[in-house]
Image 1 (tube, helix red, strand yellow):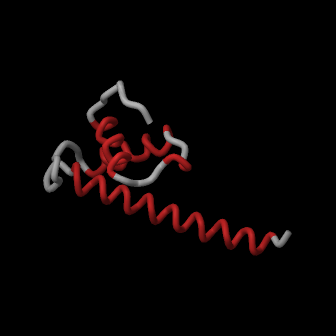
Image 2 (cartoon, helix red, strand yellow):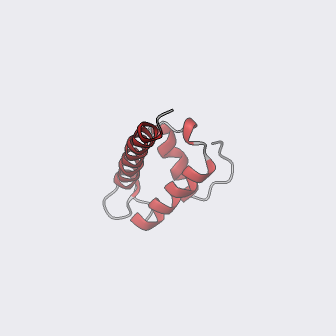
Length: 85
């Protein structure tokens, strides 16, 4: 097995995942920012923290970075206890 090739592949996959997470955070901010969001409920810092909680509670293989996932972040922001990941 060529470890150099494997490491390059992992690095590329990590960069793609990092990019998707960053885009998802921005997507959530666009919806929930308390000053300019469509549904103004939280600061940018609170939204980033909620996204991080969502990422920690959900297996990465289950995340689609879509509107369903965005809604789960909203549940976290609203401290709603009865939601399924």
